[in-house]
Image 1 (cartoon, rainbow, N blue to C red):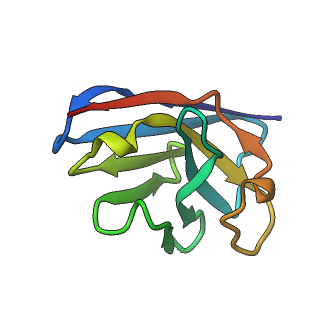
Image 2: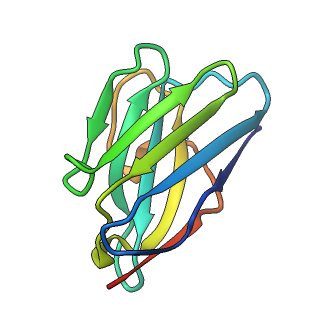
Length: 124
């Protein structure tokens, strides 16, 4: 079993930055991809960005392009999300997820383990 724990959420003013982290623990952790998703109140969960655990290749959803950067530390089993130029519409619960299959997916159904989420609130 794999446990994912997010941290780093909080309240920030528009234009500010936050850095989210996700720490993995449990059985030998060897995902193919790690992803970040978010869910705003009343909306479906949305893909933000993902990273290949082996190659480091990254994939960005529409909301992430130009503002958010995903990174990883294989030795520490952590993945981070640096969010810059935040907007009120970025307000959501942000989830870290791990995918155990060896081909890329941006669908939430394609991820096998999830964290509990961390709240990000951007004030105008």
